[in-house]
Picture 1 (cartoon, rainbow over the protein chains, first blue to last red):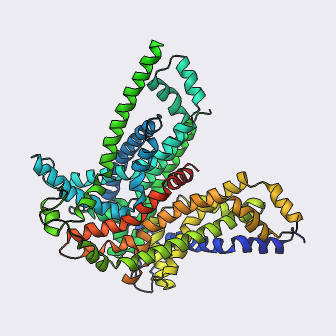
Picture 2: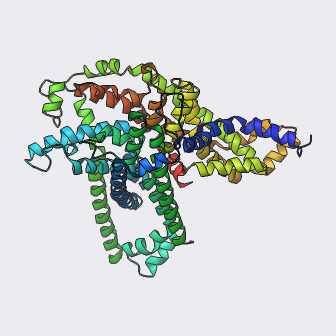
Picture 3: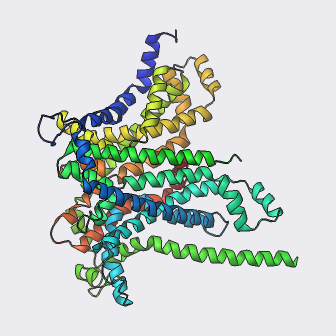
Length: 293
Length: 285
C-alpha cells in the first residue's frame, strides 16, 4: 500500500485524530475566537441580535472601578497566597524526604485537600470559620476569634488566603518532593565531605538543582490563584458587601448576573493577557536561572 | 565510635522534632474534616450551640443523612457524576492516545500544527472560554442541559494535556522496532496501535485517568453553566441547594458535605499510592 499519497494521509489522520481534532476545535479554538468577536458586541445573553459596538466594551472595562478593584484584590491575594503556599510546600517537602518514619503517611495526609473540589472545601471552611473558630474564641475568651472572620473585609480576604494555602500546599509539596528526590545522593554526600552543614547543602546545592520545581510550582500556584472561582463563591461569595470579589468572580457576575456578555468577555480577556504576561515572565526568569546538573 | 553515636542521637532528636511538627501540621490540615465528622451526628441546635463537642447535648443522631440525601437527591447526582466522570475519562484516554500516536509517528504538517495549537491552548484559562461557550452552545446550537454536552466539553478541555502526555510517552517508551515487526507480520496501523502501542502506554493511561477523573468529578464551574436542570446536577452542584434557602439547616449541610467527600476519600484509601504517584507524574511533565 502506498503511504505517501495525500489520500492515505488524510484517511489515517481522520481515523486516529479526526474526532479529537473536531472536539478540540469546537470546545477550545472556536470559542476562543468567537470570544474575541463577542468583545466587540453588546450582547445581553437573550436576544438573537448581537449589535456591533466596536471598542466600547474595552472602554467600559477600563473605566469599571469594580473590575480594577477586584483585579487589585486578586493581585494582593495571589501575591500573599503564592508565597505562603510555596514556603509551606517546600518546608513540608523537605521534612517528608528526610527519611523519617511514616513519611509516606504524611505525604498522603497533606495531599487530602486536593482530592476534594473547591466548592465543597469552601463550604467546609465556611462552617469552620463561622462556627468552630468562634466557639474556640468564646472558650478561650479571645476577642480575635470570638466573631467570625468572614464578616470583616480583611478577615474574609485572610480566610480566602488560608483556604488556598491549605488547599494547594499539599499538591505543590509533591512537586517539591519530586525535586528533592531528583537531586542525587552523591552530590549531597560530596558536599558533606567538603564540610557543608545540612542547611548549607540545601541552600547551595538542593535549591539551585531544583529550579525547575520552583518554576513549575510558582507557575501553577500563580495561575490557579488568579483564576480561582469556586472557593471564592462558596466561602465568601464576595461578602461582606462585595469586598472579597476576586477577578474571576467579577467576570462571571458581569456576564451571567448583569447580563453584559460583551463587557464580561472583554474583562476576561484582559485578565487572560495579564496572566499570560506574568506566567511568561516568570517562566523566562526561571529558565535563565536554571542550573544544569 | 563516640562521634558516630553522637551523630545517631542528634539524628534521632532531629527526626523526633520533625515528626512532632509534621503531626501538628497534619492535625491542622485534617481539622476541617474532623469538624464535619463530629458535627454530622448532632442535631441542628447542638451544632450551632457547641460545635466543638464530640457528642452534643441531645445525643447521637443519624437523622441528618436521609434528610440530606433526599434534599440533594444524592443517588441521582451521584449517578450523574459517575456517568459523566467515567465516560469523559474513557473518551479522553482513547481519543488523546490515538491523536498522540498519529501525530508522533508521522511527520505530517497538519498534525504538527494541531499539536502546537494544543500546547498553546493550555495557557487559556477557562474563564476566557466560558462566556463564548454558553453563547455558542446555549444561544446558537441550543444543546445545553444534556449530559452528553458536558462530557463533550470535558473531553475537549482535557484533550490537549492528555495528548501532550501520551505524545511524550510514545516517543520515549514505545520502541519503533516493535511497530515495524508488527507491520511485517501484516498488522495495519490501526491494529498495531491497539495491539502493540496502547498496552505499552499503561502507566500514562493510569496517570491521565487519575488526573482527569478527579478534575471531572470535582469540577463546579463548567457543569454549573451547562447543567441547569435539577435532575442533571452533579455532586458539587447539588451541595449548593442547602445554601439557596433562607434558613440553613447545619445538620443537613454537614451530612451533605460528608456525602460529597466520602466517595473520593474511600477511593483514596485504596488507590492512595497510585493517586499520589499519578498526580506527581502529571505535574512534573
